[in-house]
Image (cartoon, rainbow, N blue to C red; front, side):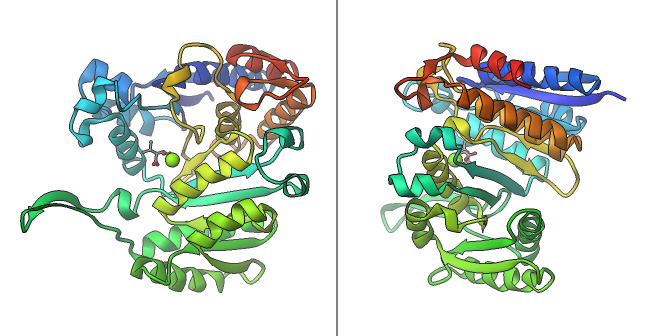
Length: 360
Ligand code: IPM
Ligand code: MG
C-alpha cells in the first residue's frame, strides 16, 4: 500500500525547504521500503496568483484525501506584495486559517529543543543554555481570537474595531486531553498558560483543564499566567515539559520559544485532528527577504517531515533516524546562515538536506 502525501510548497522560502524535506523523506521511505505518492497543492499567495483565492475547494479536498500534508510557508512582504492589496479574507494567511479549520486541526504541537551543538546560537545566559531545555507546546489552533467574529465600524464618530475571543468547553477539553496524553509519554508535566486574572475564556480553560487533569493522576498540572510565562521562558525554560495554551498566546509564545532554541529555522510543528491525519510545517514564516537564494535553513521542515512520519504514518523509527541525522550534521559543524557561528562550515538549503541524507 502506498502512502499519499499532499505537498504545499507555498510562498517565499517554502518551495526550497519543501524540496529539501521531500528529498530526505524519499531517502527514508526507500530505507523502509515504502512507496509514496505526492500531490502538489497550491495554497497562499501561490494559489492567489493562479486562482485568485488563497485556498480552493479542490485544494482542501486534495489535502483531505491524503494521509498527511507537508507544508512550507505562505505569505509575502506585506509592504510590497500585491497579495496584501486584497481584502483580509482573500490574503495568503486566510488560506492557512481556512485549511486548519477545514481539516479540523485543533492541536498544534510545537517542540522547542535546544540542540547542545547550537548553544552558541542561543541568546540566553550561558548557564541557562548549558542547562538545556526540551519544551513541547500544545497550542489550540482552531478557536479563540483567530476565528471569532470581527468587524470594524464607526461608533460615535470613531473608527472602532472588534475581535471576539470565544471558547466552548469541548474545544478546551480536546486540546487539554492532547496535552495530557503527550505529557504522559514525556516527563509527565503540563503547564496551562492563561490570563485568568483578566479573561473569562481563561477561567474556562482553567476549570476544564482541572477537570481533565483528574483523569491523569500520573501527570502533574501547574498553571501560569501568560505574561509570567513569557518571562520564565527566557529565565528558566528547563522548568517546562508540556505547555498548553490557547491560540493567540500560543502564536506569540512559540515564536519566543523558537528564538531561544537558536533559530526559527529549527522548529518543526504538527497540527493534528482527532484521527492520525495531520498538517506538518516549520514554525517559521516565508522569509521573503531571503527567498530564492538557496540559503534558508531546511531543518525545521525536515524535522516536520519526521513528525509526519511518526504521527500520521506510525513510522516512529523514521523520526528518530531524521533527528539523529540532524544532530550528527550539527555535531559535524555544518550550519545554515541563521545558526552559523565561528569555526563552522556554512552550507545552503539543498546541501544541508544532502548532508542529512548522508547521515541517515
Ligand atoms: C503561525 C503563523 C500563523 C498564525 C499566521 C501566518 C496566520 O504565525 O503559524 O504561527 O498566526 O497562526
Ligand atoms: Mg506565528
